[in-house]
Length: 164
Length: 283
Ligand SMILES: Cc1cc2nc3c(=O)[nH]c(=O)nc-3n(C[C@H](O)[C@H](O)[C@H](O)COP(=O)(O)OP(=O)(O)OC[C@H]3O[C@@H](n4cnc5c(N)ncnc54)[C@H](O)[C@@H]3O)c2cc1C
Ligand code: FES
Ligand code: FES
Image 1: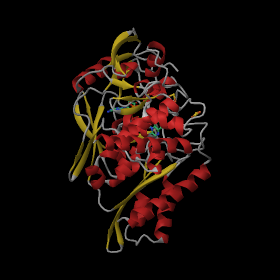
Image 2: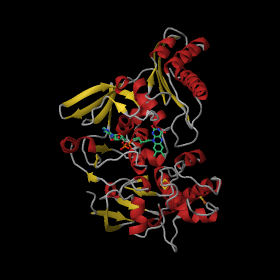
Image 3: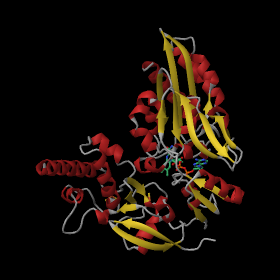
Image 4: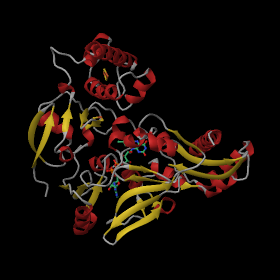
């Protein structure tokens, strides 16, 4: 009754076709079928945010979506934000400001932060903490994550101004 | 975590949804944002052989603000927070939505899913009872409207029939002061206790009040007695005490990982007193 089906996704700008059972959680499709291993599985119970990706402009925990729901959707993961030779300002800021220790939460953190800064390019510390509340980090104590996001926001705003 | 296998349906209109519900009966269930249902399916506490995703069904989302406020079932908590007209007309909606779950969950979780779920931990049912909302459901025999205050029968048991789909919630534009106060252990947790309060003031006197409590019984609790205890008073300390005492007579919390009964009753009293004071200060 639950045969595999073809699903069409756009992942980091690339159209892909995957064959999966509808019940497959999107995080597994990304990690195991598409080898996109940036988004992590921290809890698998919708709490930690390590699996966060952006889907049609929303931050979503990809452990809490079936691949069938994602059919036809546009998905961005940490791999779509920057590359080793062209880091996203958030990646650069996390590196500079010690926004990570073990790094396990970082892809989810940065992917969520990218959406937060899109919605609110100049957040206060309180707004950052509230907007990042769906992502858990067991290492940093959050202080440096907040600092990194603030620094990235300043950097991105300066770059925007310079371009205008 | 792998849920039991299911057949996935994504119909594009309500007649398609109703046809699948008719065909498969108890084996079929609708899914909105999936952020209550998928966790239950992953734990295999819910098995849904035919899963009907509502995301492509037209006409189920959107917020209409007038003397009556209508919110489509598929409207997300994030949509509620973002809607300035709604926040101006019924500010308790934004105040409550901001206290639900976390940002990621709020992009997916819908009003319809939250009120239809029947989980006593959900925040919207109590809120809807405070606002005296009604729920529109559609089924094989057409549409009907069910008052939120009559909707909840027991945990996960509601007045909605299995072959009916909730399409919207609506309520009269609320008057007066408001507050949604919630005690939780951490972000993303359900309430240990939460209170929704609307109060109307005339001169220095309370002329009407509505009070509903969350996660303190197997259903949300609209406390008529607590509301009545405020009416005709100046909402002084004695009146707040009387309302809290009346509310405590209506709730029936059970011990769980959020604490023993005595603690929950204590928190319920603190939260309601705070909510009343804040609503009164805004009235
Ligand atoms: C980490 C986490 C924290 C959370 N914290 C909170 C919280 O603090 N407060 C809170 O209130 N909620 C909380 N939630 C739940 C969240 O708000 C859910 O999204 C919401 O309860 C259900 O909405 P949904 O759209 O996801 O519904 P779904 O999960 O899709 O559906 C829930 C149930 O309702 C039924 N249903 C859905 N839509 C309809 C409809 N239109 N007609 C008939 N039946 C329907 C489904 O069949 C299912 O039984 C949390 C969830 C998570 C994962
Ligand atoms: S793995 Fe998805 S929220 Fe933790
Ligand atoms: S850096 Fe280790 S969990 Fe965040």
